[in-house]
Image 1 (cartoon, one colour):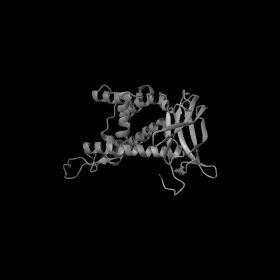
Image 2 (cartoon, helix red, strand yellow):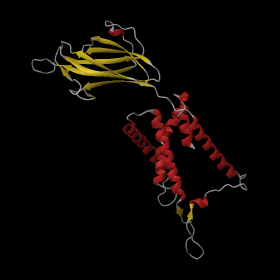
Image 3 (tube, rainbow, N blue to C red):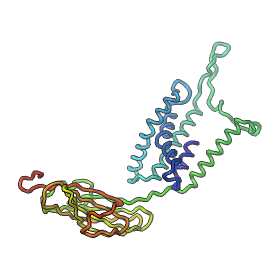
Length: 303
């Protein structure tokens, strides 16, 4: 019941930022997956039973690890971790573990605590023998009504969870990639050192996942250790939803040796910028940086 309620609340986009959704998400990340796992590993009856304090500690300790493993598997299988995929996988995994725990409990027998009159033990009883079986004759019993109410609430929550629209995660990706001699893009072998006046080329990649066509502006700047900055280029970009744009950009090292930072600033609208107002650049929507050391060609040592 708690799993259904937490999942139904977390799936609602209009609750974003609310304390109710924060509590529900906390349960899904830090409690419920670990609790479901330890109920499978340690039954609530018998010699392997754990104390409530130990169960709580085990649940809190193992839940983040389970979430991390689920995220890793999603990334390996689909190549992209999204909120909807991760939440759905967590709910399905936790529900499967709870179902396995229930099936395991239904098949578990235990001895009665008291011996029989002839000095032996009472025969094993299955857990199903002790589970309530509400019938029409006992439907008005108080305990039966509570159990039927619990089943009804869980059913309603699951139906609401299935009927609710999945939350949409909108975002824009900005990345810098290097290019091999064979023309393959890779996140490796970035230019680290340059001599004054030499140039290097990297590929800026912009991907639109905003559900609508977006107009972007990519601004490339160069900042030196003394705080001086200059705008190297301004590139307008328009992308449809799901479209990716790769821009091959070339930057030139300054004549003064030292550490230089090349910054790629992405704006979702066309900012009022020109090549001479570096100090007035607004805060970007996305930003990535590349640090390069400019070395003297005389001895190759950093000045």
